[in-house]
Length: 426
Image (tube, rainbow, N blue to C red):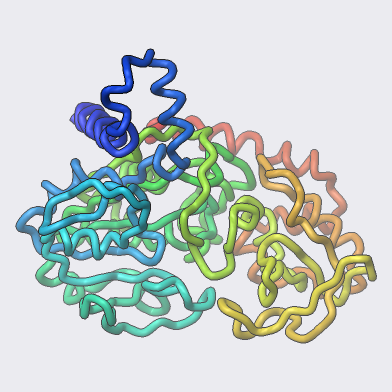
């Protein structure tokens, strides 16, 4: 059923692109297929070539018609195709490229949106990591906003009252400790318990097919690691939702009524640059690519660049050897109290290195081996991030990166075999 819908919508997508990109060519003579495809490819940006689940409106709008809708989203929930603007509830072509919020899009499509549910960082994506966010009201739409962070990670039955269907549209980055997939777990659980269907609008994983790192051990389950998966899972958020459901990871083995709206024209190995930053401290492609590797520093006394303009692209601390590269963290957007605030930190600048294709441990190992105070290098948060005590013990014992990586092989092979069942894209 889904494959037929995807095919039909892909055809519609192609027709719309031809209308917007090729209408002016009418009457200029017949061109061969290769020439047309080349000109279309040259004239479209990557964002126009890859459609997200949100862009796949031909499938999900009929499912929302005449329903009272709640939506879990933030600043990443946008449509990015030039034909996605609406007029009087009807989708029309535009000659100019623009972004539109999924909330605004649904309202313009006369969908009865009732409430917005916001994850960590809030609906506008401006809050610090871990910052308490209160319920409120969206100033643009006057819709109530319910915070799904702090003590209210799973919406309560009264917060779901009057909702016929819930839509989930958040941009994940493929790392186990990025908390949007934890929010997904609790949303699915709440939907299962309250008999509310869930529609996940899928989005590409900017870290593609990378599957790497230690498998989380069950006793270290937390909001930064809900499931026994590797640190980098190599799945889209829609695929991940299918795995949560299929493996019965929800409370009491419950399963929710889940529909995943797939991306258009997407293959896993395709590069994907996010149109907006997914959270305050992931400002660009480089930070997103290095996030999983450098986030492990959040469980040490080494700064990962919070309080600078190069978050998750640099690392350093006052305890590392003096070097040509240094920085001083100061309060800024997304980091009101950064680690080592106003202190000179020495470390390494990774802003210009090539894209990594695995979880890199070399910077963590180097920092531990060169710090002036090994006794204070790791803190309790490191085990939560790593999902195991083993990694810290290996680094402290001087185990080589090659040997550490060998210790992951069995767990990764087992995860990949399980993961295959839930993949949507090649």
